[in-house]
Image (cartoon, helix red, strand yellow):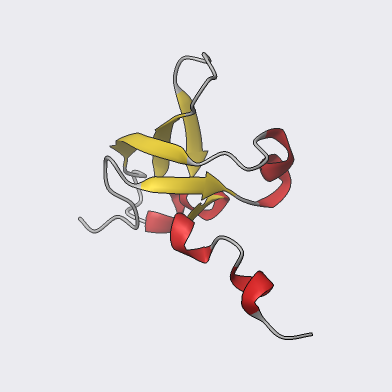
Length: 77
């Protein structure tokens, strides 16, 4: 099955939850496929630097690849 992120990928939290993890780059440590096979609903367990929270799971749509960081900063005004 194809997943958007793999174990070891570095990602960032987006959407409403991003306010709780400002500037944090996190690492995918496990993938839990959704039982329906809809990859947007896959859960990813992440490791957050300097944060001890146990298993922290996010859905696919709550994460973005780090390559999209500051993409809007390079646009001209």
